[in-house]
Image 1 (cartoon, rainbow, N blue to C red):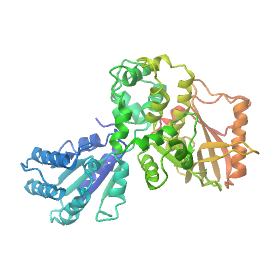
Image 2: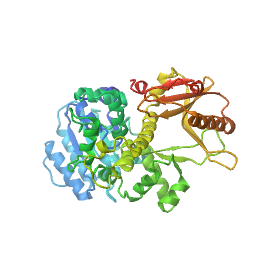
Image 3: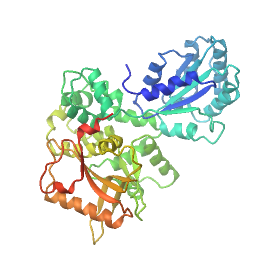
Image 4: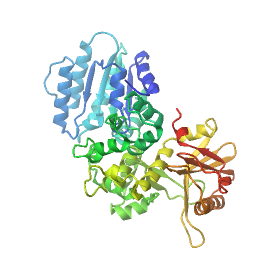
Length: 474
């Protein structure tokens, strides 16, 4: 049973009702459920389906393609080139019964081996044959987890495939609400605090959530998923990056630089210096691809003269890996249960909650009643000088109605209290933003917390509140 994804399913089904042949690219982060979505939507009924071979050579890819053709009913020899492979696919299609022919090629980026000319052959198949058929009956769906490859080779192709895609569907991680629905459908009996904590670890990745066991607490589930001797996701980090990137070493170096929980972000120059990666086009590509795949985010200081961008680790699981899994030096199989009240656990919660909030900006806007207001959502920072302290605001919402919401995001097991020190810190942020930004709108402080804010003498600083329950809105 599919949870959510109604819009994506409608888009996929609509391909069958178009008069012309359709070429659709489905992409998104690894493990997000792209393949399951496509197969379930079409009830596993395809004229042809194939999955690329991870790390496979060109010959291995061609052998696998031949095997998929055979499974679809065409017995044939191993093709020598991709041109030959698509000629065989044409033969299979010509033999198929009348009606729409849905072709599903999964993990297309894996099939693009050096000097294999996969894109050239695909271009020839689509432009020279599929779109020229009088029947106009081809629905070609290609899928890939290497988001950067899909973007460059299909979405922004400058060659023969330029403008040829008729549809593109980006499958994004589940929201908190969708994860709550997933947990309910699996009879996991989790409350919203439980779902939030799991989301801070697993993100909205259905594959990870599918391993959770009913009858176990959050801590028990996390121990059995990541820390036990037979943990299903013990090696997930290595698999995640090595499959997405052909040479993952430098990608991981960048991630490691950004993983320190004390760092709110780093500039390009900071990352270069700490990672010791050579500057140049390759480094720029690494940053771009990590951003396209959803592991990091890039933001500049909004409305200021300071334009040097900051990069920040945003992927929930990767943050959890560095702040928690990698620190389990003694291989404690009950690490999560045993460190539940530790300082490091609380530090992780603070950073993880901020990222969850950044992933639920539409829900925050809805809670504030500004869903229909044109809004520039950004971040703001300024470095410290001899005269003033540095300041950073991770979520700034500049509204067309003349207001700017400066959002502070705080995780707390109880109702959050603004004390004197924190109030001073908030005032410093407000003063710095008002002095240094070009924003002339009226400023509002919005507190985004798990359980609300204590009404004490400092609460008057707060104009609006958003709580955990608001983040679970549809």
